[in-house]
Length: 620
Image (cartoon, rainbow, N blue to C red; front, side, top):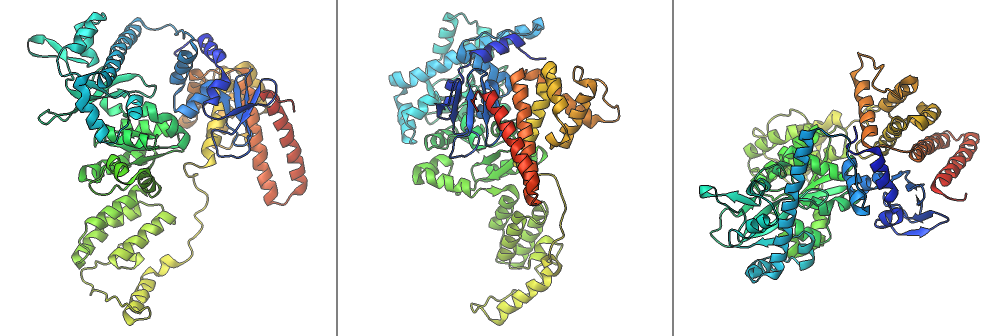
């Protein structure tokens, strides 16, 4: 069930100033009573097609079809889940959220967690003030300035400094009513010899580690002087802080990442700061070389289903190995992953300082797929001057090439690269060809029509043989990630969830919805199940031998429970599906040159747009 009562969720939504909320993402201009227009924040456009209804507190884009309420807007633009979005709205507009009845032990754990977070937050504020106000922190300020980091970005990320004495933070916490158990459990203090609790961090630059909402959970601390060990010291694992889940700077990056549909993962704190300062605001730190699955999941969540994760880890062996491990996890979870090839011996902060932000953006633009990155690493490390070295390189790259989708531009590009670098026919790369060690080296001729050049061309043509014939049509397959199918699926699932959340109005629109409204086969089956008398009790009447249907129905029900809707949202959701259906039919009618059908569909489209205008508060 929902964590917060429906009444308090509705109260938070009612308190929202939609012009203030949405206006932070796009300029809005009055367009009639209770209605504003602007450029859509969800897709590129030159003519405003994005509408906001301040009375119903809804938004809709007549160009791309995105629509929803204030909670949905925050989810899409800030990469937040429903719980985080409603909490942000409540905090922003001063609404108290009331919880559903809670288990006493769960309530006790929640209250303790809130108490510890309050202590960590106060400590972060203290460290930040100390960096700028204390003479003792002068060396830290000089170091950060030497790294090219300005005061604006340092304050934005709340970078601080821990004093060298060992009891300042602990003493302040005790004065504020926290006991030693709180101090140790929060990670700001540690028990030493004899059980004496002292400050955990002393004489270090402090980087607050926050969650996506900006709530500080722990710290990363960098040594400032020679002899301080270890160089980096993090908060120990505790009830608040879990290193495997932590992404440094995610609170600063999530909005930019959601908008750009990409996120850049780097290793160090200063890398994140330097990139953010240089305008690459969608950058986060992965807290070291390793990239556990929890962090990769967090990166993916920040950019959404059709976004891309860019890895810009150091180009040493540890960084390469981390990227290859991440690639395996990304394939299993269908996360789009690209690798940024950094110059050897340079991290992003060094590159930006030496060559400017455009140099890093160029690397982003030229980011490689993981298989291509792996192939290039093999070729770079191989001894290509000897037949045996080329044999070994060919043996290593063949399985990497085989992992690429057949008949894809990426595969063709990689095969051409390997064939050129190893001086072999393409068929040697794509098939279990003979080894190179037994071949006599091919003489390269500087003359375009030379015998040797002609021989190589002939050998390649003969070896490629069958692979150069026209490929057979592979037939229809699953849609590639990032296609409009993803947006359609989300819209269809959201509509069905809204029908479940509001069955009294949802039933009317569910009866109007037909298979042509739903382009996803799983959601068509869910619609049919709900329409067959199961809207009030969706989990009943499911076939025992169809676990796939049960899983999709459960997904819709969970979304309905987590994200309660209202009647206006149900209507808006149906009209968006109706408009998508008409647009699909229009494309088909144009292809068939069926002009009579096109005229009918144009009239239907105008009617739906008129209804959408009515919902959004337009006069006509």
